[in-house]
Length: 326
Image 1 (cartoon, rainbow, N blue to C red):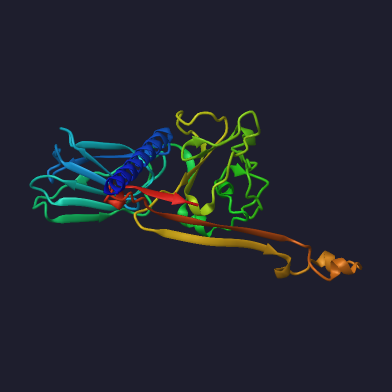
Image 2: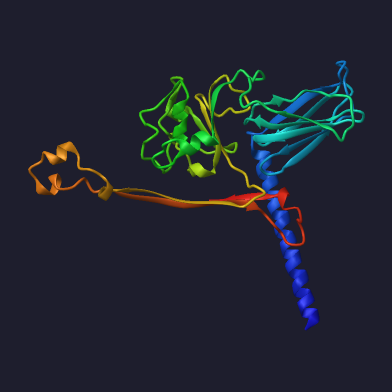
């Protein structure tokens, strides 16, 4: 009996291990396919302006705790690539200098940014903290575009909750639809970006192409507004790496999992019982029209849950892997 229980425990552990390996491979393959990642680089110098080689640089995502490290070269330069968009903390340490730490550094999709540091003489146990400004000038790119962030998405009126229509906020983007348009299904948005045809635009989800081929540019799916971190609209002069489009680019970046559990539930309803009758219907001699508003009923409900992925006995640090379900 004990041997069977031991075998059962071993089998369950191997099953959990295999599942975790498969999950990591899938996540890895997905990350390689994405082109919405960006990079952080910079030069580290001492108070005299001389380069500080061999300094340790740690970049940590403030939401998921995702962490990358690097060392400065002989010129004091470092670069860390393939970083998902989000807010980061950059920590720099070198012998004989105080620790440098910059928080709230915003990394936008596909737009490289820099964090330069001038270290101060002192003990490494002392820390100089810098908080990044809310807005920064992106001098590394001449791309004509706009970024709609999570807070804006949260408070925008989106009838049907389709974030695709947020592209209307960018100058040069024209559509017969409005933000209040009732559209929650697959759609092209009907956008004319800088005069281009609607079918010439490209829609992507986390860097993956999301338009139907041999069709009219219709999106192959929709994403709930609560699952979107940012919507990036590129109208002109974007890098050749994007390609596939003679018009503009509408790039949706979804939220990642976090190290803490979060959950939301919602329902958006439309019901004639809450509406007033229209002026036209009130003037009608037909009692069926002048006595009540037009019959309308719509219910849209759902949920979002995010948090750490815990595999008992294997990943003791729950901060290393997060997931989102919606």
